[in-house]
Image 1 (spheres, rainbow, N blue to C red):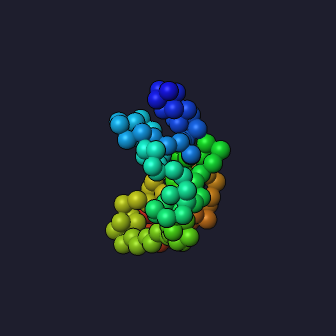
Image 2 (image 1 turned 180 degrees about the vertical axis):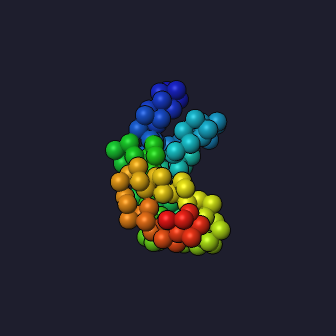
Image 3 (image 1 turned 60 degrees about the vertical axis):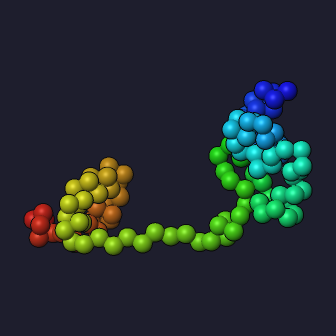
Length: 117
């Protein structure tokens, strides 16, 4: 039965699969519920993991709903002129291959005296 559960958990993502704490946790690492006294409602309502777990097999590649799902994430990029000059050739080439001339030009105009264009 343990082997069946481990294989089932791997295929489905183990959304609602409880692992036994006798070594089964390594095999079904996606399960947040360990042992017979850790049913899903404990995680849903009290223990910490959110009530909303990924379904339809998405637990294979996505985590349960948590506070981070409501936090807007962004990247801040700050290049110096020397850094842009070093990367310019690659950026321009990629932009041109993609047909994004404005992207290529945005780099070219910033380093025009360096590339002589």
